Image (cartoon, rainbow, N blue to C red; front, side, top):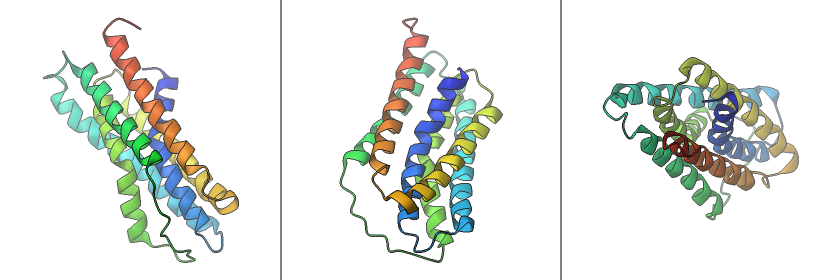
Length: 188
């Protein structure tokens, strides 16, 4: 897998973290760099750890499913991308209150919820020739940067970028899954 394909995966799985960070920024009464860094670091760490867990799980089963691993990778990326598109086009009422204090428990739940797709991507990474260390570092760093940008943009510009980010992320994951499938079938 090329650097650019991995980078697009990192952008794809970071899209929902960006959208949630954007919302967090919108609801900050007063912007503090400390809160923005905590939010970005939390999302970045979860997005890095979950693919590692997925890769460890996938590696245990890789030898049993090598004949159809490309279908598994395609299916997982299709599901994750489709879920992101579904959520982007579903109505989500904004019920969050503005805050000055950062609720760590809520932040951890949000980081876990937005990184479940990264777990599925990690399973997919077990079936392609790639360095997992490099992969999780890139995914974590990309998520950190996008989440930090999300908080800042949310604080300044509002929540209008969340839905497009989820749409682009979903489409990117579906396209990468399709590319993996076509590559293994010898079509690409």
